[in-house]
Image (cartoon, helix red, strand yellow):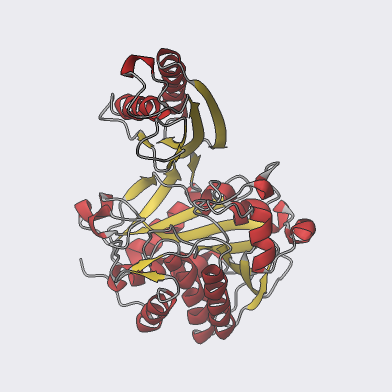
Length: 418
């Protein structure tokens, strides 16, 4: 069945995606725009200009979030927030997060061109540091806005020794004024996010867009193993306290644990590893690495975590190592609002679209928003399921359909009769 023509301006949206991708560009199609960096600030200022062109009143808060507001007929009604993020991974693509922010701006601009005045206020938000790769703790901006930051977050440092506090100040924020940027949760009515799928489900199904039913619960751990450095040529193998060897055994064991049930959506990843003293002819004394463990079933995820912790303890003992495990993030699975899903279903049918319903393995800003309001998400097909990679790609045709569904969902949710 052929989809109906869209009201949103696809060429304008495509042009903005391409223009934003020039900031922090790597390789042919990649982007490296780390949170609170100079490239991040340059991107925020450009997007702020587009927000203002669309008729939004803008501000950058002290968490680094860019917020654009359209008051509507009843500005004191609960806000419909729409958005995502524009920071990226160090080896990222141009679509992750970006289509959710630029798509939301396109929604507002189209509403203005259609002379649509919302009954309640809409805020478009480009949340800061969703990715979490620079300071090893994600969803910073959205958690800050909601007053959900944890102790010690400003003291976290990046690989160059720069603290979150220092980076924010350099960005133009004032951490001493965080309270001014926090929201009263009762003022937020709901949140909608458009995002690339970052997986292969929609492509396999042959469909352009999908409706998200929930987000898997992520668990992030940092593991540190400490042994004893020694000369690589003189210490016998059976006498070594090799921290890297221990880490390798843990990594293999994690892979085995999450692969035990092939029918389950459990995934586990070690994506960052630091070795000290990092010399080819010194036995590694200390290794620090991250663990990312996710599952839509929290009980199953927690059982795997318990097994992994036991394995780490056993491997440390067998290799005469000292170990330390730090918990960075722990969230349970969060399900989308059935009311919002129903609106998306109805509008998809009007567009003559078949929209599969699927869970999200990656976490998004929606995860944090789910604790204070109803939320909904729309996924756009990812070529090859590739993301966090310069090869990440979604066609403008698919992005336009996702943005059109976003437009229809938003206008329905801010109408007087809704």
